[in-house]
Length: 193
Image (tube, rainbow, N blue to C red; front, side, top):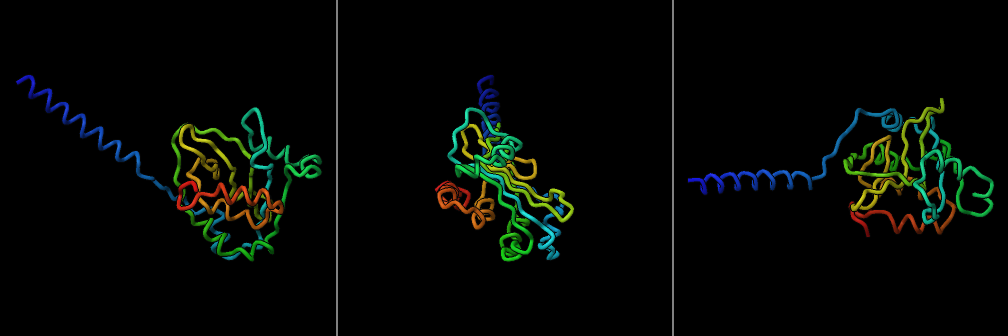
């Protein structure tokens, strides 16, 4: 009788464990309330947006994780532009209107949050601002997920990286070496190439 209770208990524990294991593998998406960015794109107010890209070469070495503020400071130096290891690019809304379909895709992208231990090591940070200079959408690349690869930091949340986060800035990066590296790193169908 005692053995039977142990078997039943073991079967119960195994089935519950398998149930939780199966749930953990599914991607859970969330759709936040429509953001100001989404509303502006949906309503055709793209000319009221600007896009600022701060970057250093993705392969640049550092001995510590780089915060967004540090990246902005580094990319703003004269040496960054002079020696070609980084810079700042500003794209006005009139230029962004050429990329309406891409902006619609970005504004409607479902976010898949990552609940694991992540740390930000920013090499690229881009921010959309409205005509009053308020931030309406921001992305920092990359956040590293211990044992899992890369994530992207979107509007304050670590999310699974997707190609759209790369596609939105590639047309504006003037350095072909950086574009090539981004194309190599860009996930295809959510997987690394």
